[in-house]
Length: 188
Image 1 (cartoon, helix red, strand yellow):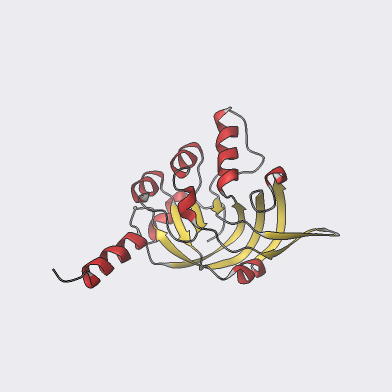
Image 2 (cartoon, rainbow, N blue to C red):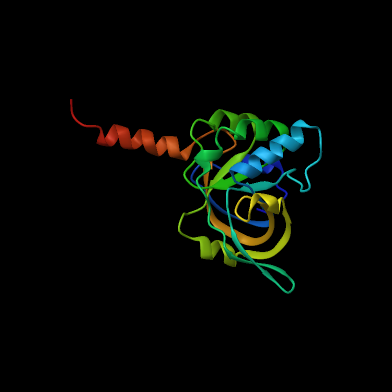
């Protein structure tokens, strides 16, 4: 898929599907989520565009060079930490997707309501992720620190990404948990 992503194109994806993304993705961790919500609550515009965009839960390692920035490492961070901030974020923006690791427990109905998807990126693949970033298109709020700043990355075939929650609210993580409880629950 290519960003910006039209929400109607997400309906053909199901939890468990594999895909790659090209275009622009924007990173955000805890502090960046809070700053985004503060800016929006004041009625101000963000310095980056989230319309049809994909937000990546990532605190990259980036090095300054003569022409801008080089991404050294860009692995996903645990999405569960942002679960409490996500409902307001999705209400205030028109994001099409979120990338992270570990899932976002209990948000299937919200993703269905907002027509959004959650994409899982494999942990431990930070160097591979950096290879798929072709350019740093911008950086915002460096006062939050390198990991917490918002980075705009141009990516080419970023992935592999697994649809963890689809736009119908089906949650792969919950399905796997349920199946493992049924299969491995101790005898009574």
